[in-house]
Length: 128
Image (cartoon, rainbow, N blue to C red; front, side, top):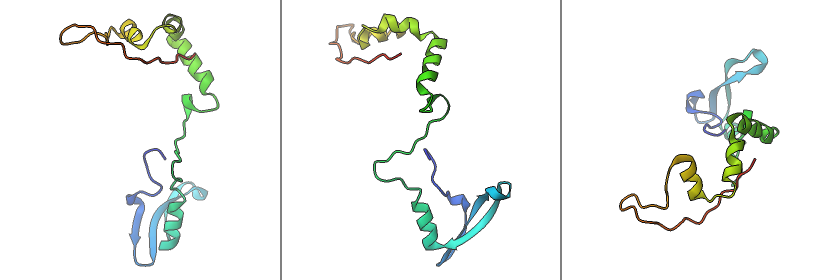
């Protein structure tokens, strides 16, 4: 779950002092929705099973960013987009030079007076 929780509010149908009734999708019965009533303690237990441990990030990538094929797919995308021609030119440049070359942005020139600013000290690794 990247942006949603296990059970959203609209799925909770009713609750009282002892039980919680919520809608569930029954995959054994052609994916039809039905109502399930369980004790409040069991509901909280099931809900907490979806809370990740502290510092655990639960984001799954699919498609191009799937872990198994990420390197091959990104290499293919870069080749299709023509990134290879830029990599050889940009490999030995620093970030201000790269920004000026690609976008025409001069980060070392003050926009107000046109004076020279110090170069930011950063290097970005270029991977292929």
